Length: 285
Image 1 (cartoon, rainbow, N blue to C red):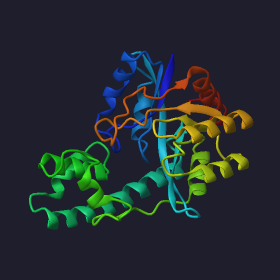
Image 2: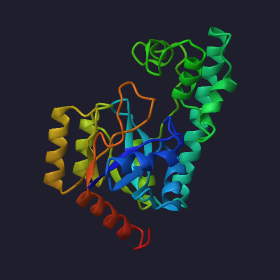
Image 3: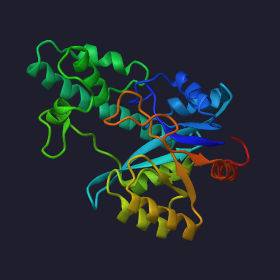
């Protein structure tokens, strides 16, 4: 038995409503599932409200976004069992919701000028659960109009690509990664560095491990390179860090499919997360 500790739903940029995820895990025989949507407390609240669903234990989580200004890249931190009443956590989520929406609405205005059949209201239909319009929601609307045949296809890179820069890309300002770490600490959360390969984060990861700033590393992730995975495993062993794995499930909103259970966390590591969370939260979760 094991758990998938990294999944996304329509509470952020996933395509599947949150209540459908536990049954996917149950059919695979998973014992636990972390609901870890981006910069929101919605999925964590769902897990607190439904501690067990379809026989699967739900773990409250949030994937918080920060920025490594030294190396100019984003950083994702998985935070487990956060205190949802923490003012710093609520402030982080409110700020990111506002910044993401401002950027997305500007992108939509520009896309309306490019494609007269597109209307911002169509894209906003995909933000009803989250309250945040993500680029994937805009692409879903464009796909419905027959303007592309998938989310992360040529049109996505034309509009939102990084290199070369997309013609309609507007990126929110993210808080410094150590500020986000302080927010997670204030919320009493267990902090795991997510998918270090995705944003080429190994140099930062080594720094944070040396500082004792994180509790674990997402060693097992579909996009981690074999080299990074091996180094991450060694770092966990050397520093007694928690080893996690997760699919990073987004439903249909993937460039390549990552089904629930594609990568998992062993039960003994899940137990370590819970024990540490209880210690930080004064015994109550």
